[in-house]
Every structure is written in structure tokens, then in C-alpha cells.
Image (cartoon, rainbow, N blue to C red; front, side):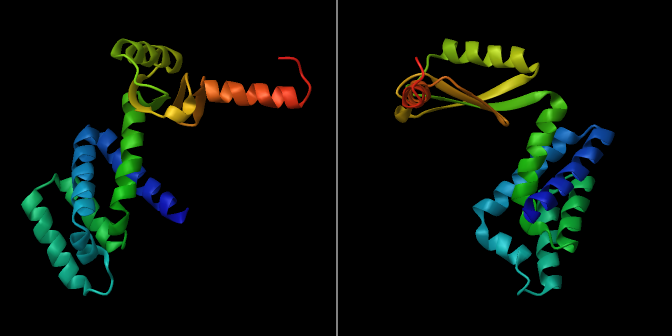
Length: 183
């Protein structure tokens, strides 16, 4: 839990700078790219974050890496701050939080749509439009299939879950029958 608080704090700090200078999206791209690079190269991530290696050598590696990537000055300073505060290992979590915060800033919400079978594109678009109208935000909708649903759909937007699956309806009916209620 502490790790998430740390990641959230650094993501908010970078986003505030991005809001001030109008480069929030640039920092998002740089942070995503840097986080992806570390995830794809675990040895590099270890070389930067493992305290068993001498700090001066780890710093040289990071400086050389940043010179090759040539990110914006603010992002470069941000990464160096993470290194100096021994938080470079949190880059992936920070990137995730930053993405969500940047989406909020742009009025974008991410949602997931789970269905029993693959839905036609026009149906997915109608659902996306309805969710957009309901939330007042642009919706980025990720779809997936789960044959265990039997039928219907389950949609998640943040903490809100809209469960219209046959499986849930059958479970609710079963519970009602157990309690002796009429269905």
C-alpha cells in the first residue's frame, strides 16, 4: 500500500508540472517509454535500482541512458529525482498512475466490457457512446470475452460495475428462491 501512495504522489507531482507548462502528454509518452524500457530489460532495471551496486556507477548508467534517449529537461530532472530518492524502481507504478491522472485531465475514462461472445463493432460503439453520455467523458473501451458469463455483458468504469450478465441474473434468482421470495 505504501508503494502505491509513493507512486501516486510522484505521478501527481509530474502531472502538476505538465499542467503548468502544457506538456502533460509529452511527459506521459516519455514516462510510458521509460517504464516500458525498464520492464523489457530487467537487467537494466536491476542495474539502476539494486542497492548492491555502487550508487555512483548506477548514476553513470542512468545519465548515459538519459543522454541517449534525450527526453525533455523536466522529465530528465524527474527521473534523476527518482534515482536520488531511491524511487527509480517505482517507475512502472508511477507511469500507471500518471496515465490515469492524465486521462482525467483530458476528460477521458477507461472502461472494460466483458461479454460471453464477441460483440459486433456497432454494438460495442453503441455501448461506448451510452457510457460516454452517462459519464460525460470520452470513453476508451477495452473488450474481452468470458464464456463463463453465459450471456449478457459486464462493464467496469473505475469503481462502477454494471453487471447485466445472465450468470449474475441466475445467481440473483437463485438467492431469491432460497429466501422464499417470488421471482
